[in-house]
Length: 116
Length: 114
Image (cartoon, rainbow over the protein chains, first blue to last red):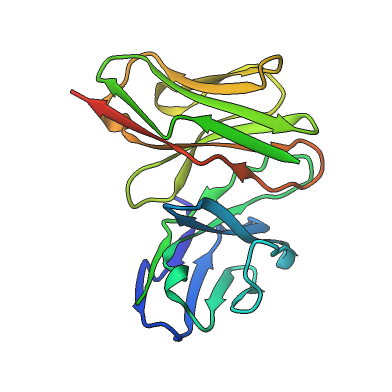
């Protein structure tokens, strides 16, 4: 049963600390998306990758957030330094992103981040 | 550019009643449209999608949606609600040309009472 996995599922940290969230996309998927979900803003796209290259990270605060794909089986989202307003659920999704194809995105279970 | 509007942040129905969740879209190119469901403490799961084939699309768990270009709508329906349908539902749109990201609506929480 192929699925997207995310670690950790929950993270509580103090303001100023570095946070790293990890995502393992479904094997064979070449697109990876990072979303943030909050009550106030809903579901926001932070960044996405195709074939490990970042295509768009305009939704991400550049001064503190960074997203990378060290290899095809791992995507990371890092916040340094973290702030209370970063508290949210962060979702990773993967898909097969051929152009013109109605690429379904498969979502992971999310990482619930609380910054105190 | 694409966008979706979901009317009603909350919809309440009784078990066995018709479910209707509204979604209107805006797109500068022919759209692909999606409905996702999110159960508590879980990620989003695809319910159904429209990709320019049949305008009436059937999905999982008895849900269906009809693409109406003249009304720029893609409303989600289910003839008879079940308690297990209680969840948050998201409509999403992307362009059908090239590689384009999904744009999600703000979500509608479906409440089902006995």
